[in-house]
Image (cartoon, rainbow, N blue to C red; front, side, top):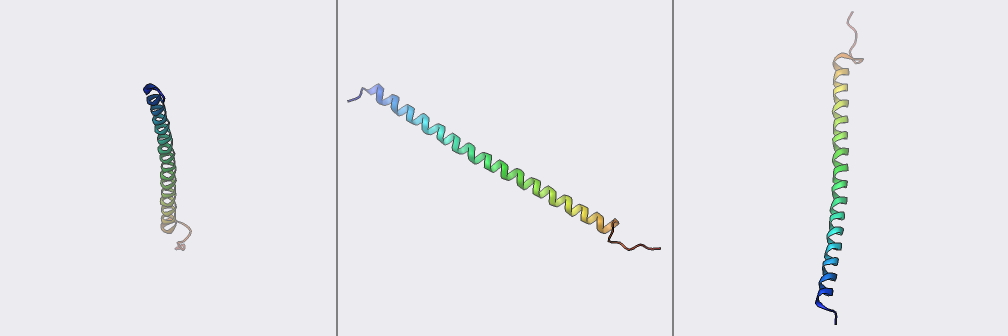
Length: 68
């Protein structure tokens, strides 16, 4: 039979390993969420810029016929 301190040491080491695995799993999820958020923000910004450019083209650009 193992002494009590050996069992405690093994138990603490196992818990520390699980804690670091849990931390790494959470970190991976946070990185994925951050990348998706940044991609969404960039795509939304690009859509807004394109809509503004289209609006300006319609008002002042090549779509208007010249009035002489």
